[in-house]
Amino acid sequence: MDNSILQGYVTDIYAKYANDLKLGNHFVSDKRLQEFVADLEKSDILLETFDWDQWYQNSHMVDRPEYIADASFYECQLLLTAMSRIDKFSPGILSNMRCQGVLVAIIERLQSLYFKRAV
Image (cartoon, rainbow, N blue to C red; front, side, top):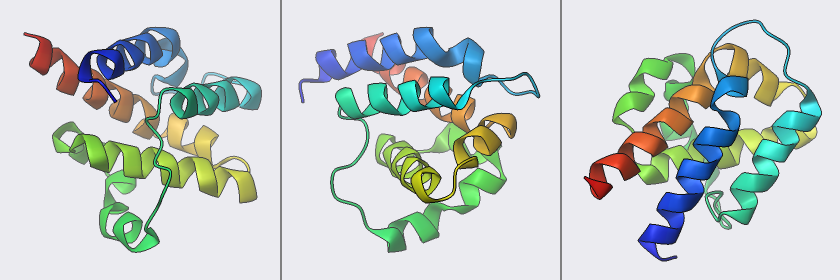
């Protein structure tokens, strides 16, 4: 995908969901989280092919969201793809990741990766 198009998608996703995904115990509906996943799919941020071994090698980041500040674009894709797939079989994972600050850390990282490229 063209980098400028992807940058636009990342910026749009950040603007649309940053307040919903912020750390805390405020309520965000499952429907809203599914809209987030649908937008990730439409923007080609989620991976089409997926290697669970790579997820396991990077899953430590969900326990320590501060590690996500140094994640690559691919690692962010990997985390988002895994969480969205796991949530289909174990509803509530996305909500839990939101409450722990993982989702906002990822979209902030994506935003910073594309902001740095644009500057």
